[in-house]
Length: 414
Image (cartoon, rainbow, N blue to C red):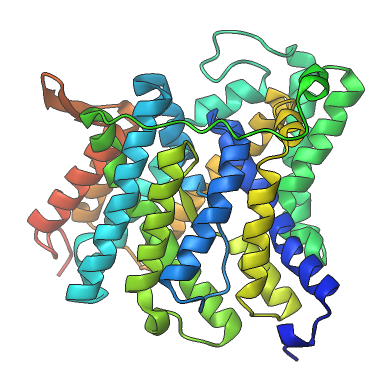
């Protein structure tokens, strides 16, 4: 039976709301830790982003917004290529693309996304996100820097730490019970961290020297055309992810949020939250399925719980020692988690095509997938002078063009 918020005592209300933040915490801070962004900024922008979403949707949808996994690989590549500020400018543009999509949905209805971005294009695009930087995950699991140029932790220790992190995450996600099953990443990081402590490779000097109260290290974006062109097509992936998450919370709560407040408003809130986060140096935001799972478990659907979680995230962002502690997590712990995350992203891309019943025996479909994957993984670039389009961006554009140009029944057996 659903329990209403009005029946909760003030203390239980606070604890229940903060529990939502706890469920989201592991994934929330993992993205900045993997990409080099500031975890405290991520906490702050997740909290404010959730409040922005609530304002836009008139506080009707009980979900929490935080760091998007879809952008992990693109951020790592972009920061290596254009620096942090240039990357943030590209991420802001990606957020504005989601805002644009929300207005197109408002004008043309929900169907236009399926017309121009069917599963045959979106599926391999999602796969690319996980495949392109798989070597980074492996290098970090081996105790190396992401590019493999320098050893941070001895291989013999690193591989044990990474394996324990990976195994703990998998075991918790498959066999964890109750609330534990909702925080597999947090469990994996904790197990890997404890193993690293036993090896004596964790340095707490930064925590000791950090103040209790500190302003997050906000960073302003700069705008470079190449970075913007790279990030814009990637916005397609969290857009599709957003639709799935809104459908999931609709099923859990028994209310159709695709109709009220409508996808046009939920996507607008998501896009504005991402744009705001990127303007301060935080990772793009997305609706969190972990929190949706927690809502389904406790059967309380009041948006006020997400407000409490959002305010809690903002408050934690100013704890200097928390940010310093998160920075002590060794590279192999992150590498072990990344192996699973990047692999799961690839699996999601495959599942997208499976659910849509894409027939890969048809030459037309094989051509589209082949071009997207090889251009994306191979790093093909088209352009002239400073105007360049490559990687995932080029792969998505070509996939869309091929899907529109090639006859729909080309290569099918009659």
